[in-house]
Structures are given as structure tokens and as C-alpha cells.
Image (cartoon, rainbow, N blue to C red):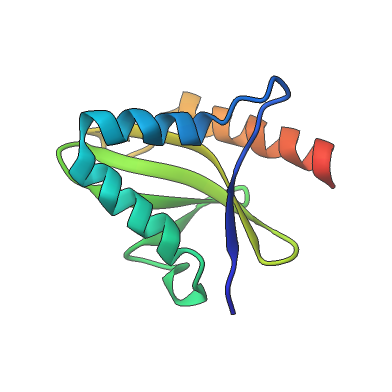
Length: 116
């Protein structure tokens, strides 16, 4: 059973996760390759759990890559075997900062309001 992975698009047409990944590709090609491979793996149900991915609450999940900095892509499921990536960060902490969780939740709500 395959899923599709898509990127959240703002009302202004920006794709924040895609923009993050392009910057990551330029600054740290090895971490970019690992995160891109992780996103590709999410297309397959067996990778929807640890160690690649885990739920973080409120319907959100994280794809996590540990490298020089922890790289995380926050995403959620939708009908039709869809995964929507809404936010991405790099940090040294073990936890996701509240402001980043708030950003991901706001983008998820925005997506739901516009597309459901």
C-alpha cells in the first residue's frame, strides 16, 4: 500500500518544507540525502513508526534524522493515503520547540480548512 507525500503550500504559494529542503541540500548534502530518503520511505506503511517516524500528538508525526543537527519534518495523514509535510526544522535539542509545534499545527489547520 503506497502513500503519496506532498508539501504544504501557503495561500501565497510558498512551500516552506520544500524551501527548507533546498537550503539543506546546499548547506548539508549528506543530511539532505538522508531526509529525502526518509520522505521516500514514508510512502510505505512499514516506515510509519519508529525509528524513522513517530507520533508527536494532535495528529502530527515527525520524520527524524540525527546528523550534525537533528533534522525533523513534521507531517500528518489525510484521506486517500496522503501524507502532508507541513514544517521542517534543525536543532540540537531532543524536543521540538513549542513555536515549531504551533507552526505545524497552524499549517495543518489551514490545510484542512482549504482542502477538506
